[in-house]
Length: 412
Ligand code: RFL
Ligand code: PHB
Image (tube, rainbow, N blue to C red; front, side, top):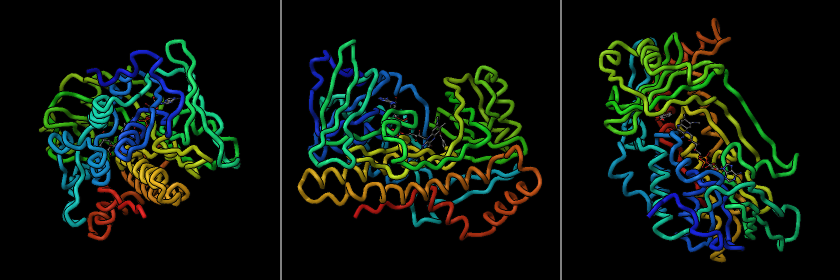
């Protein structure tokens, strides 16, 4: 059984569904599974191939609320078996490491290190097992009749082409899970949404390699040469990042140059213990904070990166996407079970309350740990004072730990 195959023939694509989900990233796939569990009919429409989606190397840290959502969707088994529970993280500042004891500071909470690729694979597999439809390689996807300000009878539609055949799916609701560059947010009339944005003057160069991690826990590094992160996917696969200039191209970075630069940013013990090897993947990601308000326009609900972006320093992007679709799935279940529409009415407000707190944490952690090109002088001293305060204050460490393991979700 291929988990990334969409349809055997385009005749299988229906003309109607209850919820059309645009995008088969973690937000769209998890929403699809939660809706299936609630007995709600949904089709996922994705512009890329399934293999392309699985090939994207992204997040690695799963909060407890995300793990709970994956369990609720019936796809948590492999994460529990293969994921690595982490009770702490380390911050390395100017060559000295400080451990933040996440479990002790949060009453026993932890995060799980389990790659986004694996989460995606588990969700795709569950979808294929249940025979649920994902239309991959849909071209020219467009959304219509979103219904804001019209009568309740309005019926949204999704149009696209697959294998040269044009399709239209009518639905009750559209879930815009199509990421930052997707079509859903862009289809809302100008002026109906307000956006907030901060672009950072650097990127992250990431490298994946089949070498054992340098340490049992993640190390976030602030050094005079810039930020670095030592992360992992398993006990035999490591993920490292280096802060880099935005004009750098990935082709400029040989594996040898990457490892050499990483060594220059690590503490002496990590340098001694670092195991290097050929890269499996290397890529550069820009860093951005971005929020759309509200996360709804009529019968279109935005979720995940389609509605907001965080810089990866706080490891919040995938987790926010999971929280959004947990709110949305519960709201749609209440609607279709005839309970009430309060969840749909309050979706944006509830999701945004959590989003803004994660935006604040990701911005704070990014600002604390990176070298800013124009920061020499006062800005550097502020970082140093903040770090000295953090390492000397249990209250400050508790604030970091609470945010890192993930803030609670308020469902009702
Ligand atoms: P995605 O994953 O971007 O998926 C959107 C999907 O929509 C498709 N699409 C369309 N489909 C149909 N029609 C169109 N017109 C379409 N336009 C786009 C796309 O092909 C895609 O398949 O968004 P989603 O589902 O909201 O998930 C968000 C997460 O992927 C993202 O927030 C995280 O990866 C962010 N992130 C991290 N998050 C964490 O929680 N923990 C981490 O440790 C973490 N590390 C990271 C990260 C992101 C990174 N990069 C590369 C930005 C590390 C990095 C380096
Ligand atoms: C990752 O492993 O890709 C990762 C871990 C923690 C972060 C960001 C990315 O904060």
